[in-house]
Length: 458
Image (cartoon, rainbow, N blue to C red; front, side, top):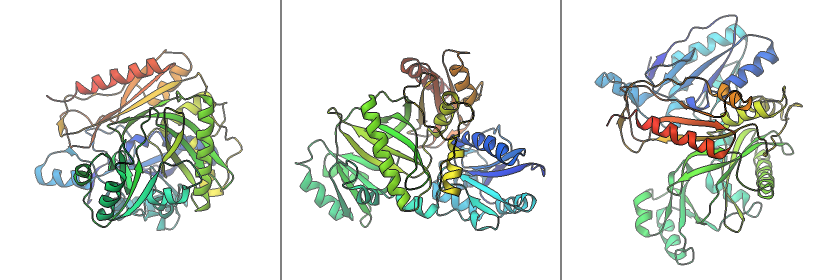
């Protein structure tokens, strides 16, 4: 089985299955979709997950691990190594897998159809060309188009507040434009390729050397913006249903390190009600622009707020955010029983162009839970020590804090296991802290980070 590192598939003919394709960090959302399908179809529902995450042990039913770099190391050196794989390469390997295609055809034959749920819609995904298979998410070609930062600024110029920007075709024009603007944009120039995420393919620059160190491609398009010093980096999670209906799940404060590297978020946002109202308004405007281009499904909008409380749009992420699961858990504890979950809302948005009748938006002043997350990304290769197993699941942690069974708590998710080499740019784990206030939530993050440090050899 080419590129398949692990599989424990054991299908039950009496269950209704759906597929999930993406990183384990979004796996928890499948549990909400599973609950919705069980209620809607009145059947026992199962999940088949295809993930790139390399771990020593998988405590999931019906999981397939696809990671060609790690598979190659295992075949050549007989050693399990956790390597990062580019999303395009991962999805292409999944789509090309005869083993996965056979499983899909078997499920379709048994139940008549199959929904595929993804962390991010990707043009390399071709499994929905199989009869009976349907992507439960944004159309991949539209999502890929919208994730282009140059297109975003072109579409939104004059519609939402943007920092001063220029579009450069090729490295020569990038160098020429930044040199001319540097005296005018004294706080720095943010440079990004058309496609960038989580600090990759982007940088805050202050000199020609900064440009040449980070960017090499002579022919690609670059977006340059005036860097604006700021304290707040809010992100808004939403769902596009149609040109009129843009659902807002909530606003969180991002933790940005080294100027442009996302490492986690905290909810609820510390911003005042007026600013939150403007952020929601701008996000609905952006959502309507996406809807006009045919986009349906989950999206995120990132902004900054400067010392004068001026808001500037930064980017759209036409996919599930890293903290979508935390918003799912927050909604479950804060909204009336029977309210639609985010996966349920996306189902109606994608398939019916509407919001479900039971869709309700969160009150950002809810006192049920406060949460914070931290993505522990590695800057060099490391080898882990003994195994670390979380005591409970994330959904239960939210419930326990919301119901005051415990005052606060944190957990470590997606830790890959002991005695395992993790390559640079990989993740040692993700810390989720839930409490009643930001101070306790922050304390949980620090405790989780210290715990993870203890599991690095040396």
